[in-house]
Length: 91
Image (tube, rainbow, N blue to C red; front, side, top):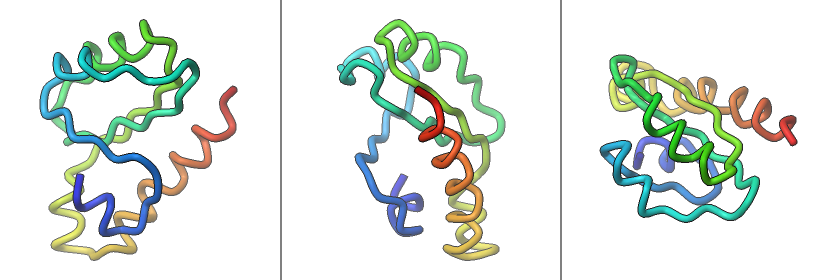
């Protein structure tokens, strides 16, 4: 998640490692959350946990550390920024 911060993405950035850890996070109602995960991660549990807590969730799958190393900060930002815009358009 430090990769996301390095790319200049603003906002609260949390690292849960496992979906079960999100059970300990108490978002405010309608809090907008982006799950930034590796391509091979199953996000169903995490999305369900956050949906049950009435969060607005968007999932972005990519290996952000690899993108940072091979393509740089702008590439990470270019992957995340459209998702932030989509999330902001949701109620």
